[in-house]
Structure formats: C-alpha cells, structure tokens
Image (cartoon, rainbow, N blue to C red; front, side):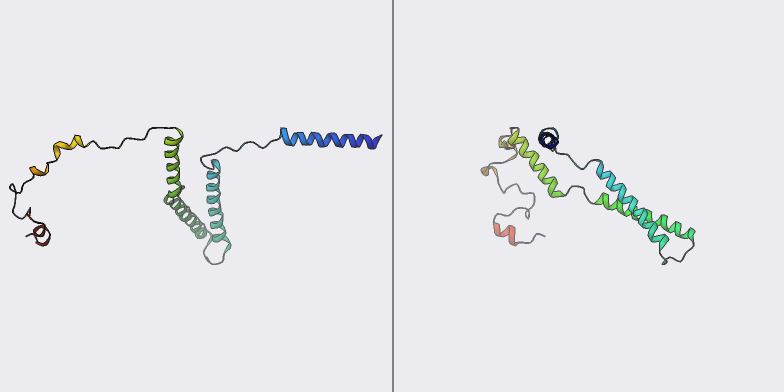
Length: 165
C-alpha cells in the first residue's frame, strides 16, 4: 500500500506544482518607466563613496607621499574634493539623454498627436492679401525718385560691375 500512496502523492504534487506555476505565480506584465528611478541616485552615491574610498587608499597606503600624517590628511581632503568637483562638473556638462534620443521622443510625440489622437495640424498658410498694401505693382515702380544717383542703376551691368564710391 505504501508504494501506491507514494505514487498518488507524487502525482498530486506534480499536478498542484504545475497549477501553481502556470496559474498562481505568473510573472507580472512589464510596464514602461521614464527612467531608472531611485537607482540613479544610488549609483551616484556609490560613485562618490568610491571616490572617497579610492582617494583614501591612494593617500594612506602608498609610499610615494613621504609626508607627515597631518599633511596626508589635508592632501586626502583636497584630493577628494577635486575629484568630486570634477565628477559634478562632468555630470552637469554631459546630458543625461542624448540629442538623437530627445529628437526621436519629440518625433514620437508628434506622430502620436497627429496620427494616433487625430489632432488637426496647424494651418501655416500665409494670406498674402494681408500684405498687399506693402507691395507695389510692377507698373508703380519707377527710377525717377532716386535718393542718390549711385543707389539705383538702370541696367544690370551698372549695378553689378561698377564699384560704389
């Protein structure tokens, strides 16, 4: 009877484990995120801690600085501040998002706005009737009211090949 009960127990165990893996413990659906969240701050804190630790290793374990301990401590403080300042400056100077990625994000937003959401594009047509009072018709242009003789020329050769005084 014991072997039969062990076989039934194993059969039930396999079936319940299969049900749990397929139904109860499914992997959650992935969702998008803007960035890596709190991990960016954790990475930045880790880099500053590594700078301080490596500055300490360089200043206090090497024999290449034959100075007193108090001088080494001041050199350590100065060295870590210089490196942390350099890291902060480079972090501010180098953008977090590359320019081509920003362009693709803007392009995607544009397509989403007009294609997916169905928004109407801006009407950039120019109504030239609004500017008609600013322009003269060809028969209204004359050469008689010149302000100076060298300002306007009657022929193309005069305007291009003659130096102005």
